[in-house]
Length: 152
Image 1: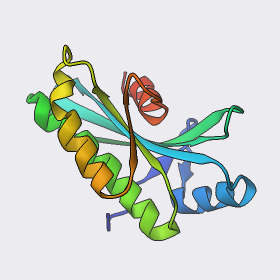
Image 2: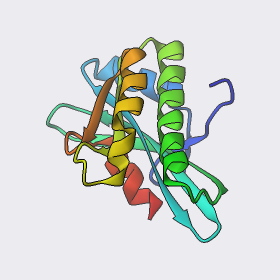
Image 3: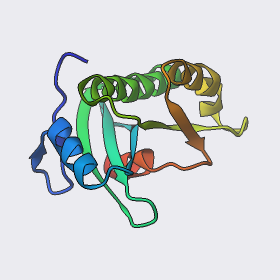
Image 4: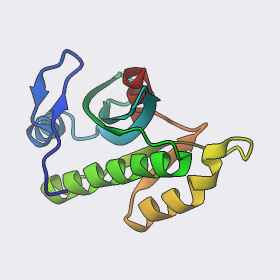
């Protein structure tokens, strides 16, 4: 991810994601970092929200987020695949800059009754092959829950 993505806090202030993460790791070396993306098609645009979430054990979570939009993507597979591309792009960027371990949250469901299930094997396999632990519904969704909240 050569092009820098602009991250903001929940108040809209621009945050340097790398410096922010470094500061958190210095003060909380055992923090768990999660990256996840969710999308929503609204009018003629598909909006993507990518979140970097910092979980402090059982003592809470805070996060920063990046918003982007593209012309509306009507094909579900394409829209959801882009979520994975964005999450892995941010994770790889952070790993390269900080050599940090993190988890990727994917807003797909292991239950075969959901359409998103069709992407589980391919997207989880891709992320696992890069060394990431992947969280898929119904398991620990930290970053994608925050992204979902901001998509609406």
